[in-house]
Structure formats: structure tokens, C-alpha cells
Length: 329
Image 1 (tube, rainbow, N blue to C red):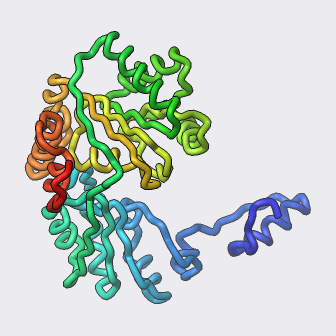
Image 2 (image 1 turned 90 degrees about the vertical axis):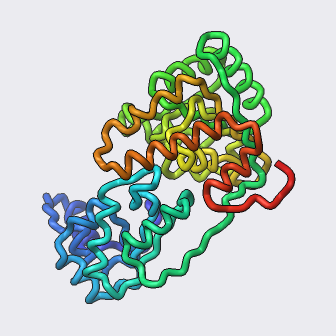
Image 3 (image 1 turned 120 degrees about the horizontal axis):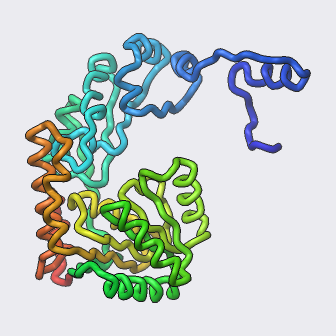
């Protein structure tokens, strides 16, 4: 009636009844034990958890039956990907325990090299590879160079004011928290309802900002790339990148949140030449030579995208291994 559940999990009804009787209760029933017993039809785990639970956990699960192991954001497996994570790379150890279970890797931003790495890392056996088109035909891609300063900020606020008047939501991605705060404050001063999202905000504040954006309580979200998960909002009309992105893959992924309802929408990228000096910063915490090379290559690809004088759509599709067949740009 109140929470929308038709059944209880093990022991929940018993515990609730005791609490209603005024009894103190202690519970000791972990999600892991429920998982091992086959209670759940679908089990979501982080790669960190999946790699470090005892092998007996997987053996017990096998006895109840596992029909599939799915890895979302599978590009994180590859050192050649734009968002490599060591824990994803270690998922290959599950193949030893789940040798006869089908694996599926899911991603929207894998180059040919990354796809090959995913297949090898997960030790896939003669996998079927399904590749959808990377061409978002309803999106316009534009790039402008700019000089930082109050005059450009006034120009940017003026442009966003026009976009807000037309309808739809807007995401502005910034490369630094300082830029997020500056742009957000400038928009608020101009009377534009604006939310903010970055990694140094308290988790509850981030959740509240995310929720308000999804519910249309404000039209403009200014954020770092930390604003990435669960943004399935169909009516985002503009995605603006303020600064050259770290990689072409991340740019494609972030701009791809625009126009998911199929309505024509616009992706603008504003950059300065000083953005191109950030390569060493992006590589600073990377120990792997392969990963440093991958970061540099993808950052250079993003730089070339900024400075192109030819069709940017064709350049994006070429990067992901797809031939752009149309003569129109």
C-alpha cells in the first residue's frame, strides 16, 4: 500500500511484526547469503566486489545456476580505453570460475582496438560482435575558440539565455570545479535557474541536484565529468563543453546525452589553446606506459577535433571505425 512491494524478503515480515509489538530486534542476514542461495534473479555488483569475494561465493552461485555475466561500461577493461579502471581489468579471473557461463561486454564508446582488448581480457570464446552506428543524425556538432575573460562569460550567458527561452534542458561540462562554480554563479546572477554537480560536493547535495535536473526543477546543469551516470533525460537540447575534453571518447559519450528523443539538438565545444597543455596533468597518476600512450593519443584526437576545418561528424565516425557515407556534413 505505502511502498509498492507485494512480497517480503527473508525474515523481513518477522522482524517488522516484532518491531510493531514493541520488541527490540537484531538482524544478521546479508545480501551475500541471499545471493548465494539463488534468491535474486539479477545481481548487481561493482567490479571491486566481484573480484574480491571468495571463490566459494561463485561456486555456490553456480550450483543455483548462472545464465549470464554482463559487464557494463566494458571499455573500462581496456588500457586503451578512455576510462581504464584496474578493477575492471581483473574481471578476467572470473573466467576461471565461470568457465561455461556466457559473458557479454556492453559499451557505447569502444574503438576497434578497445573492442579487441575487451574480448581478450574477458577471454571470450568466439564472440559475436554487434556494432551499432555511431552517427547521431539529429545532433549538430560545432566548435568555437575563445579567450577567457569577463567579456566571453557575458557572451556565453547571453547565448544560454536564448537557449533556455527556446525550451529543453542544457548541460554545460567543464574541465575544472572552478569553472563549474564560475559559470553557475554567472548564470544565477543573470536570473537563470541553474544546478551544479562536481565530485567535491557532498553526496546528498549531488543527488539532490541530479534529481532536480531530471524533474525539470531547473533547465541548466553545470558540471564536471562526474555528472555521468543515470542521465537518461530525453529532452536535453544543448550539451556545451567549456574546454577541450580529456578524450574524444568522453566527448562523444557526454555529447551523446543530447537529443535522445530524436529531436534536432546542438553540441557546442568551446576551447582555448591553453587547454592543450593539460596532457601531462591527465597522465600524472598513470603508471602504465600503455595507458599513458592511450591517454595521449585520445587527447591529441580531441585537440585535432577542436581545430578541424572539415566535417566533424566524419572525423568522429572515422575515429570509431565507421565510414560516413553521406555527402552532407
